[in-house]
Image (cartoon, rainbow over all chains, first blue to last red; front, side, top):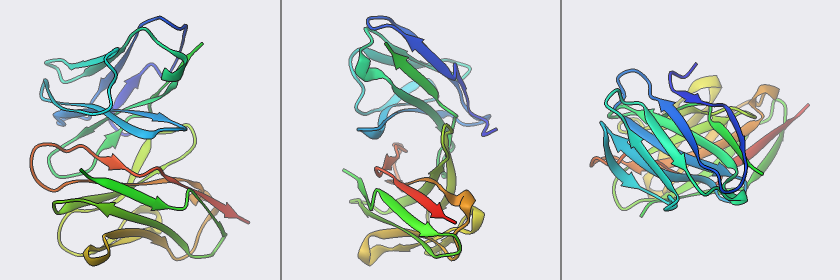
Length: 111
Length: 115
């Protein structure tokens, strides 16, 4: 157990739908990052939150949004889903000096 | 902007042979460098990292990597491959300073170990 918890592990949904992915960071970590992993794009950085505030934005679509709550857990909202959104979505958390600790991911399948 | 290039999307070695996975980076500021491993259907696990100090870094499972600033490289090695090393390996870079700790990943190298 890495200490970063992601739910659900698997999600199957239809095109046009909206889903919410949840992440609880490792105890003491203030930063949360979301990544998308697909076969063609590899690991793509989506967004970073630090202590509740958005800190950096990557290749995140306008249909996607995220937030970090006062208890530091984070949610990634994906709407108007398309087949191409099918991917593994990882959350990671970090402290000040080290690398990330990754969760085990949410596998999203859009049908 | 930072970038990472991993040479070879697929590397195949025999059990007991040397493992060498190549990583070159581009960064305008002193970097922090990382290697992660991903086993099938799992998340990424940190193998080792270079932040400051000694340029030869030892990690878990017998892996090590050497930071060579002049070559902008951070290649991953293991003297003797084991079947359990079969996985995908990712090199990553981030800024050493500032408040943006975003990691930029390479496209990964799939390591196959043959008996």
